[in-house]
Structure formats: structure tokens, C-alpha cells
Length: 408
Image (cartoon, rainbow, N blue to C red; front, side, top):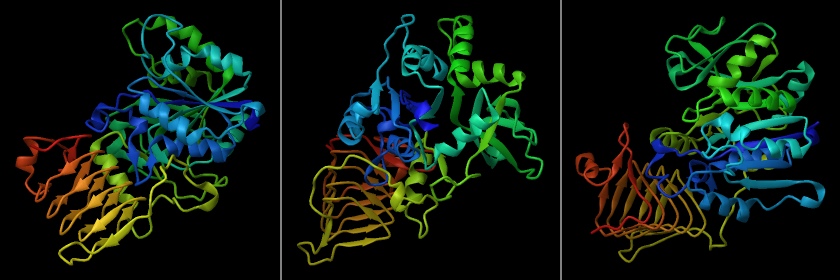
């Protein structure tokens, strides 16, 4: 079954709402959780699900993403027909970059044909979740569906952020609306609606046929998306089904966690979720590990500073090479090679690789990108009015310092 499928990961998003974290990288390449990149979750799902033919469609500022895939994911054997292949835009059809999710697939139809696969699993590279795709593919084959869409219940007030699905008792999709303001609720849960997770399985001939039929009907300057141009056209044919996320366990433990980390606040909260006593997403299932590239660095350590103050880390994640020397870290995530110097305090913050937090600094509710040195006594997240004069501050008051920022 799985050997008849190919996975295509859409990883070319600009991620403008995650700026400045996406100033120099694509959204799927943004670091997450102390050691990962966002795309690692989708790639790990493919690996553990048994999908061993994977195309990663890149576009926007893709160098770091390509490098990460090369360094951390060169694990499959081409001699066995296995691969993870980054595919930059080819402009094989027209002179434009990808104009949407459907256009990205359409411009690479030749790769689908060449794969000789029967099914294509289309995934996003910028969501945080763990999922076994094998039960979803099994349902797709059993129903002889043209298209199967993974979905999950969400609060009705969040419907304007998602594509919303209506189904019948056979889980056949009878309606799909993109970001509606007044969606139909679930019959047994009036405060919930069924949202698309952006995970699609197509029978490949059906996908190729509908893409070729409709690609030329979309203007050259317009977007060409699954949600607007493909799904609504397939539903009337009656062969589109929903797969309920978490409804079948597969091999992954059922934490049923899925997050779109498309904004600073959602990204920050998904990281903070990892610090809960029992995190809502299980990163510790030994046979479903989230793989990533890791530098070879020394172990993390907490030591006394020159003042004699002990280095303390409370309810936090510390990556390899972290040194807390007389500082205090609480409810925070430190990536590799972060240094926290004497009497510095870090609270509820995310610190990326190779950041030096100087003596006496006080950081609260902030995200600091790589290669930043904070001078002694610097305060971030304490006075938001002052922070807004220099940095991006989110709606919820999270201060973001961009990569390589130099303090005057």
C-alpha cells in the first residue's frame, strides 16, 4: 500500500506573519522546541508512516531549508527507490513562481507521472503534529475515493482561520467553505466545527486530471489553490471523504495535537506547550522520535557565576552546549550553545542558537533569533513601549529580536 504512494510536502511559504523569524529563512525552516525545525515534524511523520518517497517543494528563501534536509535527512537509500528530494521551482509551465498550493503541484506533474505512484499524499511543511498517515491511506483506498481530507474539530469561533468541512454519516464531504464567518456546527457539538488540516490524499490520476482541466481557467495573475479551485469542484462528484484525525491510532500515541504556527503568538504558544508537566504533544514516544540535524556540541551545564550565584534552570528545555553560569532560567526554551551569564534572568522566553545573554540581563516573554549578543544589563519584555521602538512586538506582547541583531 505505502509503496504505491508518494508524498509531496509544500514548503515554499513566505511566512510573513512570522517575521522577523522568516527574514532569512522559509517558515518550515524556523527552529522549534529547542532542537528541531518545523518541517521535521512532517518529515518524521512520513518516515514513521512508511512513506519513503518524498518531494519537498521549496521556493521562498530556501537555502537553510535545503541545507537542513541535506544534513539531517539524507537517510534513505536511492538504490531501494527511497528519497527525500528538495524541488525548487522549475517554471516548467509558464513564467511564474508557484501561485498557490494547486499550482505548486501542477508545475511538478511530470514528477508525479514519473513516480508511477497510484496515490499522492500532499502535506504542509509548517504544522506541528504527529500523525500516522497509513490508516488515512487505507481508508482512502477502501472507499475508492478521489480525495481524502484529514480534519479535526475546532472551536467555532476559530473558523475564519480554516477551511471548514461538512460531512454526512458516511464521512462523505458534502460541503467545504474557506474561512467562513458563520459555519455549520457539528450536529453533536454545537460549539465545534470540522476544520481541514491541509492534509490531502489523492488518487494520482484523478489529481492530474483535475489539475490539467482547471489550471488554464485560472488567470495568470491569480492564485491557484486546492481550497478555492480543486476541492469545491470535486465535492459534487460525491467521492470526497473526511478522515478524522486521531480516529485511528496507527502506531503513534493519540495526543491529537495539531498546531498551525503561522503567527508569532501561535508559534510562541506551541513552544510553551512543551513546558507543561504533561505536554499536549508527546515528543518522548521512543518509536516515533522526531528526527532533526544536531551539531556535535558539549553537554548543557549549570554552574556558579563569578559572583558565586548558582546557575539555575527551572521548568525549561536546554539544548546541547547551553551554559547557565550564575544566571536563572525559568519556563523557557534554550537552543544549542546559548550562554546565560552571571545574574541574568530569563523568563517565559525562546532563545535560538548561539545567543549570549550578558550579565544582569532581564528577558521576559521574548523570542531571540540566532547570533545575538545582549550587552550586560539589557532588559527585553519589561517595557513594551520601549521595545516597540526597536523590535517586532506581537499582539500578545511577545518581543522578537531578529537574527544577528547588534545592540548599539
